Length: 136
Ligand code: RTP
Ligand code: MG
Image 1 (cartoon, rainbow, N blue to C red):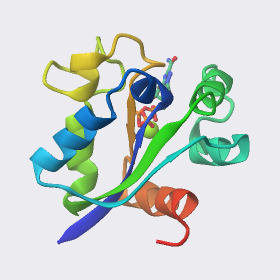
Image 2: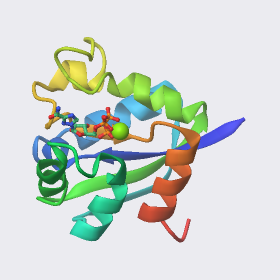
Image 3: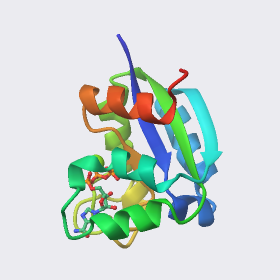
């Protein structure tokens, strides 16, 4: 059964020229693109996207960072797409958690600059796809 997930190449991934690398890994895994757009996100959208982290110590830095430059938002589709992309991304901390062979493990050093986002559950995916691609 096919599933959809919301993937972001965050501003650090875009500025480092890793958009093609991320898309290539998604495609090689066997997942497909249902939507894709380069955009600079406004504060309200970023705050809704990361609402679960409101109040945490890193929340303001996270919203500042995600709104600080263009990012690539996409809807990725395929069998078990949510878990499959989280596997490609690797753990949140690129050094402590992500292993080599994952996007964060191969290209990241700092938890704030961990290059990509992927929805973490079917409920998150539905909410995030509605937020980023309301017409899809
Ligand atoms: P994401 O939502 O961006 O895909 O990342 P995630 O599920 O792996 O991690 P999550 O817990 O949802 O955290 C969201 C983002 O907040 C930043 N963060 N900073 N201790 C910290 O400074 C800290 N913890 C989390 C990361 O950029 C993380 O991706
Ligand atoms: Mg998350």
